[in-house]
Length: 214
Ligand SMILES: C[S@@+](CC[C@H](N)C(=O)[O-])C[C@H]1O[C@@H](n2cnc3c(N)ncnc32)[C@H](O)[C@@H]1O
Image (tube, rainbow, N blue to C red; front, side):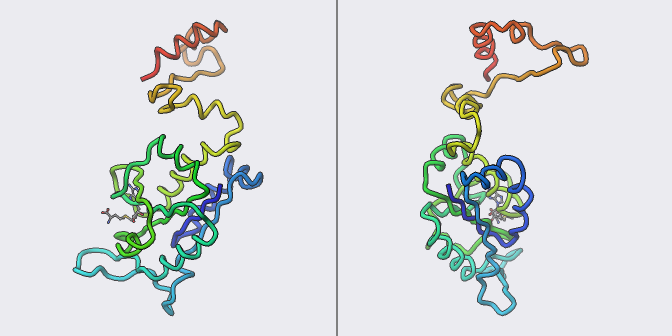
């Protein structure tokens, strides 16, 4: 699956995408992730990407030209929907991530300052997505959250597909939150792993886990 991420701070993505699962997914061509620097599309001679808001008020707003051109460029490479990460958007859920993973790709726009010019939203954005009822400094962390949540449903991203099938919020767990996990040693700081989990009795373990869903 292809992701094109548009940001004025592209370096933010480096460490997260070059470790662990994402590093592996890139190497195995499971994911194709391209970060675009919006500033490079600016026609301003100082490569400015922000200006004061019409109507007054605090902060700056991202100007439409660089972002519009960046989106048009990305759309030539990626046939997926254009998503603007925004606190005003619909809330990202497990189901939403699952359905986005079926798209041919995603173009993710990271806002900064007070946000982006509404005309870019009117002209190019298919959907606004929020990752929670709080305000962050920029859309880079929300874009990584969407990328991560969606990628888990991309075939082969996670080695054992079962770990995605039976997970908190999944249909297999009836939308509930998962049971607690334990590993070695059997006793840690006087706390023992529940006997049933050590018994090896699959039927009883299944029953115990079902009872622990919340
Ligand atoms: C400081 S915020 C802008 C907040 C905006 N003025 C408001 O009050 O809704 C800058 C950028 O961070 C991103 N952002 C902040 N919080 C977010 C959230 N909860 N979900 C998704 N994106 C968010 C958006 O891309 C936004 O354009």
